[in-house]
Length: 232
Length: 161
Image 1 (tube, each protein chain N blue to C red):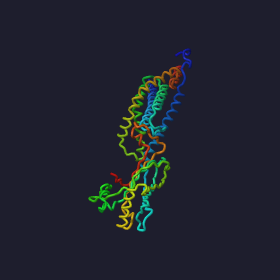
Image 2 (cartoon, chains in turn red, brown):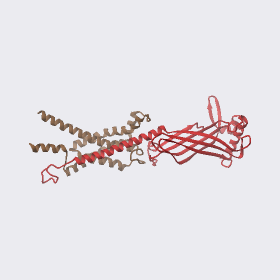
Image 3 (cartoon, rainbow over the protein chains, first blue to last red):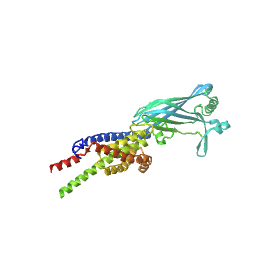
Image 4 (cartoon, rainbow over the protein chains, first blue to last red):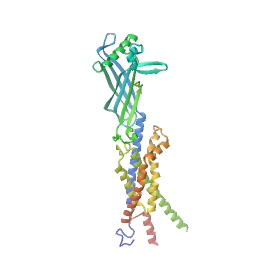
């Protein structure tokens, strides 16, 4: 190339600025890749390390002197849910499913055949135990935040009265009456609970398209289950 | 004779280093876009679903830049081809990174097949994009008469003679 035909001189110009620019772009790309790996790792750590500790207490309100429920009383289950989050990600409690069963003494004793047939069963070797489902619901519990590297405890109450569900309340009254006469304590029957918690990892957008790959849809969530699910 | 041989070897080594650097740069772009396309909601920046504009943007920018720094078409094509296995390795390293924490208990070959299978559209897309953009970058390089440092050193040597 001659000097006249080349406006950039006889030998052209150095490509060093392009190399420097490319080095800058490479650094940005490298930083994005490392950031992505760290973000992915922190999500996997959150999914592996988050744990829940649910504690349930059952209370009868509006009782007779012998501790049995009156028609105007209420049966309350209080769920204290502790979420331990040792990861570096902030979590949001999103969905809570809770089921509670009480051992159906009258059904086992043959005092209530229809309920014995509809009860949930727990097989222990050759013995079948019958459980009446008192609560079984799931609810959205948005707004509860578990900060990174910390634990939080939330209390949820489940209330059953005659006004809420008359049939269920009457069954619970019947069962608690049985236990009061059988063991001297209305809440003396075996209580089984099952809890499922759905937590969302902050900063992980959830794919909204129904055609999105399953691993994209579930990577930003943590699910924990505790207890025995007797539901059939 | 020995001096000429040493100079040729030096030139060849420089060429190899150049090709390796540019291939790695292209591979980094492929690896990042593959990881982004497989896990768009955990990458930086995170999005609900992979954005085709971002993927094309990263691949095109990388290809153009490499074209601006590549001296001949043959090497440009070699770099484009080399970037694919390098991209697979980088995407695999990103996907396998949680293994280091001990919490992801997955077989390495499972991660590899996951990354290879789900990243296939990107690998197939990257090669023609790279070849076209490298060519475009080389045309720009010629248009602005960009020359490497070794070219200037060689021409200075010739002038001294």
